Image (cartoon, rainbow, N blue to C red; front, side, top):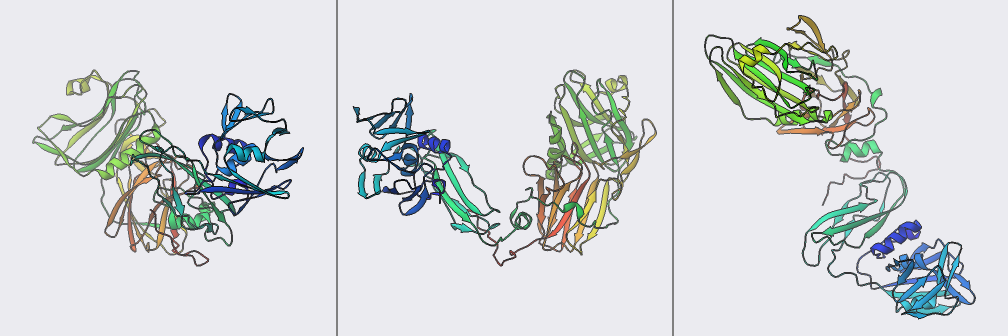
Length: 578
């Protein structure tokens, strides 16, 4: 075992920097009284409290003195080695490397007490023992140095953790239990882990270090343990993820694109239109973006960036076309605004939409108009994404408008602003069938369901009623896929992005459980071979509500796996997480 693999030594911050510069690892452990080193001249092997380690530069016999490498020995002893203005201080010892001079409690020591060999600074073992008030015994070429550990700062917090084992198989889950504390009960406000992984797939020795900081800003000494990974693998990265990954976590699967495509059968369900406004996506002047009339239920989706060069707001206005009062009821609404990060627009809107429960009602007199949606003020270059489900008790005209912030959304203003032409790069229009109910029967696994590719899953078709042009809704943004998956018990479901960056959300119903999943939990899903875990199904029938996220790229695949509950070599599922 090398110095970096020690399990039971303590090191303060300056010594830790020394260790890192040497390429060594600090390996602290709690409650050591003395640290005992047993070394033999001209041999790299060293025993540290009974554990084998290795010097990078072995001890030497120079001019009749046994000499120890100063920096490595300080690391092994867990002692603070301070570099002060080019001079090194350890206990009562001060060394001037430039002059090869040593001082003990300020008294100059005889020549030869310090020697530089190549780039390694050596110090006399006897002088080192005196500097640390340590005990030194010599038996021929072998000597034993026994030094008391440092007392440390009594106000500093103490980092502590344990693992459930010290030796693991490749792919076996590592359970960490942290029990850091502060001597005065101050809060531990931050934790810095180095080398920590919940699983290691490659054999070897790994050092894990924890350093904590309390509410007074004091840091603990680094505390480390080492683990050994060896033997027959328990899990691959894929089977491990299917057992342990949290919903929203990414995991590797290089074969995902080769899985067979499962057929989805259309079934009868809700049918209502989608009014979609994304062209011009970035209007440069105030104007009407889209407009149509309807009665009953509809979904509205708008995605726009403010390119007016000054603050502006997006409005969706409803005008009563009936000769009687009409109610306009908002059943669900999700919004992202304002933001300059396009990838946020769709994901936050969907999370908001799935969480929406309250209903908002406007009663409009004949001919009256009012805003069913008004965005926050958008600075130049920032964007808005809104998805809204409405139901009306009569026919209303719905108008999407972008207005500079100084203009009120009155009927008079709307009559005076122009209809803005589409930008020919994005879509707008009214699309029938904003809900796509599908049934999937799982038989052979793994399998994948393709969404938004325009071929296996065809694009929704509609009309831009302002121009009369037919439209294809590429990506089916705003379409709610109401998926019923049968044969789902014991499966894991994941999302594989096939078109590039994807950030979104889905809603799951699994028996009595209803849960919205943020996809991914952090960052972006980027490549097909890095799917994001969605859910592990418990019931035979799983219901998934999925809406392609605005600002993200389609197509995507929903990938269905058989979820393993035991490893291939008989290991059990580790569920404890302190």
